Amino acid sequence: MSALAKTIQRFSPVANTRKTGPIGLEFSLEQLHLVQMETGPDGGIALRACASVPFVGERDELMVSPKQVKSLVYRARKQGDFQGHRVVASMPSSKTRIISIAYQVSSGQADAEAILNLMADRLDGDLSDYVIDYLPVRANPKAHERLAIVAVAKREDVIEYLELLRFAGLTVDALEIGPAAIRRLIGAMSEPGKIENVLVINFGRTVSYLTIISKSRLLFDQEISYGENRILELIAGNLEVSVESAYKLVYTHGLGSDSRKPAALSGDDDDISVVETLREIVKPAFLQLVGEINRALIYAASQTRGESVSRIFLLGGIARWVGADRFLQELIELPVQIIPNPLKAFPARPGAKTEVDEQSVPEIAVAAGLALRGLTDRE
Image (cartoon, rainbow, N blue to C red; front, side, top):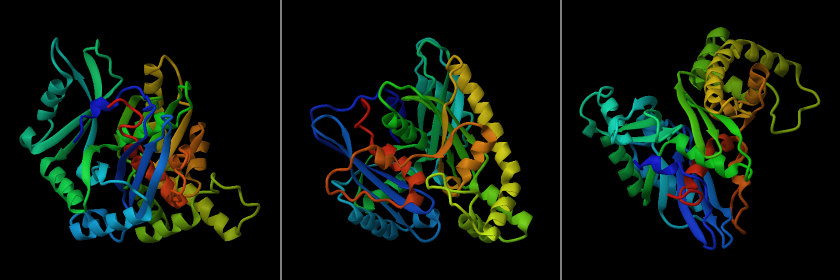
């Protein structure tokens, strides 16, 4: 796994050169996402190629089938004019544990040593059985008390994943975690000279991540026991249906109108009734999420001398529920939106195939952030 500490540096586009970046690669729960960027002679970043290819079955089942992964990678690469075989990839979330820790450093002690000492007491077995990396949060070299996001994966899982990608014809430049990719993407999408505090909620199936970013600075990252499955089970229990039926119901009707499209002038009465029922069922669970958000906002304010978070971006599973952003906004009273299509933030290379299904937008963000490695920061 790459030394993520090196990614926390100021953004600086590469000037006066034309450079093709690595392919950002992420296996989401249902799709393989590939994104590749390049810089022009003026240093500006352009989108070279992208692809999102769905796969059948569970991701963990796919990960133990090298031939299926190779075929999927081939199909995805064929969709776009990708150059080379170098990739920056994220480890599947089921194989990675991400935790936030507070640690202290003594005089002359390196951060890595202090973190490893702490992790030795938290992990089963020897440290040599794991690959451990960290991402500083609110890093202050003069402070003895520091915070970091620590990524932990079993060494055998990392080796198997690298071998899986190698068998698919890819060369892995680095492995990164989602918060590092999102931090890089948000920084690249920000207006020049404008520092904005943004909360990003990445919804998984069983856990989710709250990440607060201020330009290129990571202020906060926390895993919470809150995921899409929990809400679907709540709906299924209340309506006395299967979780699969609840899944189909929420993806058919959603929680309201789509904020990315003009509101419909009228709607089917039955559909409106279903939406209202779903909103009533999930509201208590969404209020619990609001509680987690408020705790994160209080922490952010304490670290930024009172500067508030200006907006919330959603990505991941629940972000694909139509109306989820507007529903959460009603409860939190902050602007909430599905993360903007990150591919539209960069001009496309002439002739590039860059069309992506709108349903894939909330999930392709991680791959886009991975693809920016080496193009926007001094690494």
